Length: 184
Length: 158
Image (cartoon, rainbow over all chains, first blue to last red):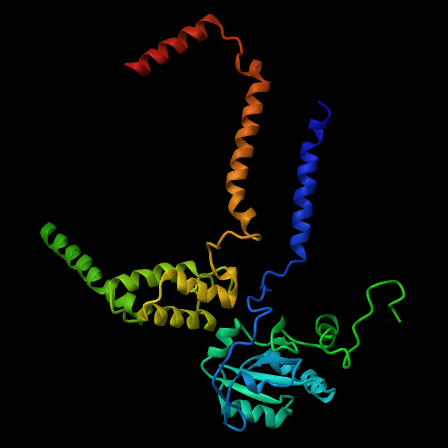
């Protein structure tokens, strides 16, 4: 039989295809379990003012919820971009995750404060309810208060244009669909 | 001399046995209200996957998030939550990823079916292999070889 000769070749091609696909999959990127759900309610203090806040404090929407901490090196890397976004009018709420409030306040005083307010989550319970497994993480809260998107890792302009501009068209117009004319 | 050596060894073994619970207590500092809860704690912490370190369960991992999840697991067990409730709690936050034995759904059905499918495929392959090449098995033996086989089989039967 002639077709039989090609079985190893076909098997190889299938395997090679699967392995090639595997190269571009990032195993550390987990699907967010909370997508499409309302932001989990909480009762915590606000980092600067010390007042008690709940989820209703995250009133301005769509908004970003940025999970950060002073022990997180990448948070320092993305901080200047958060300041830029805040200047451009993107409402950003902070979730100060498993951090020392004193250090966190120092950080904001030194580096600038891009946040509307900061949920002080010393125990990490809000983070747990949200499914946070590291910092930085940035969530999009849509107009209805649902979690619309999660980004794990440093948020920069390229990531924002690619994944976030849908909710903030005024700040960063969506990148033109990839095509020969898109390169300017 | 010999009895003394024996006694020494016995003492050493007893000493180790006596030490064993102490050593375990250093690793796990939770105090459970019942041994049953402790057993379930160990089972569940080995079945839950650490979201940060990925290829470790939360029992083995030193990541802060794994420690947090162990605390949650302990608290929920002590509060009387069932295994299903605890797993549902974890899955609601971290997705099916946190379970080393995920539930069957659209994403995992292939994973669950794969062993059965591959086994069936292998069996079918073998079947075809032996059907198509019957001649390969019936190689002609010389009379001497045939006699030797009969003799060996006879020996086995005895």
